[in-house]
Length: 126
Image 1 (cartoon, one colour):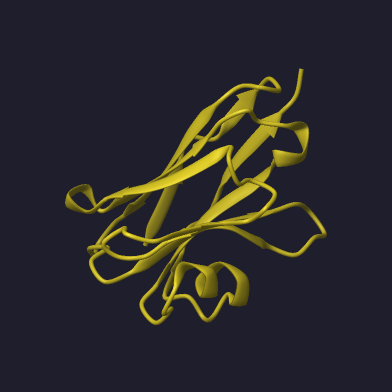
Image 2 (cartoon, rainbow, N blue to C red):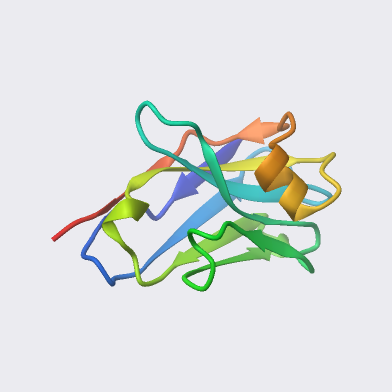
C-alpha cells in the first residue's frame, strides 16, 4: 500500500512537504504521481515522476511552485509545495503505476493505477 503524510493547515504563501511511502513493496519500476481532489470534483493529476526519477510532469496550476522528487532507497516520493494558495486546498493522493510510458501520460491520461494511497489533506487559509 501507499501511505501519504505531511498535509496540514498552512497560511497562503506557506510551504508543506508531502511524502508518499510504499509499505509492503518497493517503488522500483513504478512511476509515481500526485493527484488532488476537491469534494464533488474530478481528481486532478498535478505531478508525476518516472522511475528512477529522470523525468517529471507538472500541471500548469502548480508549475513553478511544486517540486516532485523520489528517494528510491527509501521507497518514498516527495512533493514540495511552495507559495501555497487557497485554491491548493484539497485532498492529495499518491499513486503508483507500472505501465505508464511517461509522467505526462500518468498524470493526464490517468491509466489504471497499481496502487493508491488514502490521501492527506492540505488546507491553505488565514
